[in-house]
Picture (tube, rainbow over the protein chains, first blue to last red):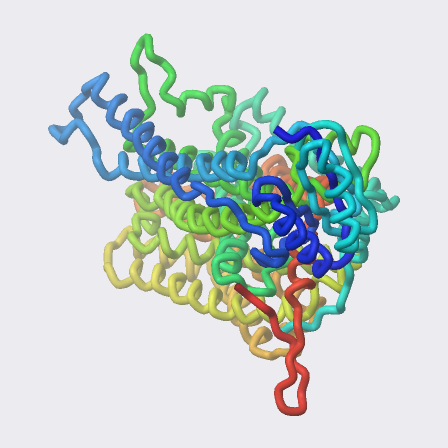
Length: 172
Length: 455
């Protein structure tokens, strides 16, 4: 676990791409740095690698759960108090399907949202090293490094064109 | 299509967050006026809680009147919001950027307003919890065969989905607001933003969220208004008992909802001076969409009338006769056709009209006047039951209390939108920035043509 975090603040995307290249050359891995921006740049703009995610499994699990709850409510209530009406089958399948469908969709929606929050690593209770200019057009490069490499990393970020480098004693 | 001005991130922040960060005097006046009318609506609800349905104009045989009309109308308005937003997101249509959030927020407030009307109409609204299967001791369960149980399940799903859609797509903008505020507002936005920092992974997941939720909510939107239509269609009331009701209601909802989006966008452009963001090209595109939607609606409208006549069943025929030839329904039939189709579609055929925001505003209101009337025209004549037992004949005349509820519902939605726009930007700031970032111009022959780079 690194115990120093540095944030290089850049004005131009080209400088950020340069900073990312320098960090890679200096031996930093994909998990050691992150790029922060207020605008969604196309993936790979800065040469960064986005780690794989498992978002698509979430709606599937949610849909199965929602369907099961829908089935439990509709079939369970009718079976637990079996009242035959007009000689018709006890389980009324067509109306059950309506509620099971809504349950399936609700489960899928809820789990999609949970999945996005989980995979985005939110909620995050502390922003750590941060600069409010990031939401006004600047781009931040956040680097986690051991204390003995902090000076070298700061120099590296500045050489790539950082307007300012902020640091924190806490881990990333 | 693109006529945008080039803006940097600070200018976009300033333009779209200005109203959130600074409160103009007119906000308090508008909020006070709207809140006063909403207070009138609440008073009417209290009167109904105390005296029941007696003070309304509802009486045998018409027990579904203005409140149910309002319910169907607001569910309809709620539909276009998410539909527009979802379809445009899935297609990655560039002109979606200023439209999506306002449309989604309109969905949330109109759906919440719609959902309140069956409760008000119940009289004893505190008994609502009986729609949930909770009585395990006596095993008294809700009847899953009843559309009155399908309705809450569909609306609950839709309202939950739409609210989460709005909130999740707000996360990047909440991060911007957190960085631009101090004091309690900073704390408020910090909590809501969940610690959003805007790294590539979070933005990628935002994009996927838009795609996934759009894909999931679109079928829910179709199911919700289908189920609302089945409140009527699975009954044996003449002129309600029609298989065409589900698609007819859905397309009617889209017609009124897209028109409501046009109304709202015109108001946003004027009120917040968002000329750089909501431009004539957006009204042009919505106008073209409305021509197709209105024509499909007309097809189903005429189909419903035709099915009623073609069957030759005497009770159906008597209702259709009443709807088309008898006062006041005959006049309404003409108004619905004229304001819902003939006047607006004839006008929308002209590009100059579609790009004239004032005219688009007026036409969109005319469409919704017609669509509200259409719901009344669909619901009440069938119940008036004019064929059997003359002592049962009755003309429904709404009371002042019901009229107050209708007026109050419009102001409630407006007040909700006003308060939301004070707390959050009604145009997604981060999506505007993305649009500016990906904007490019290419030279084709002697012209420079705007283009958009897409993945």
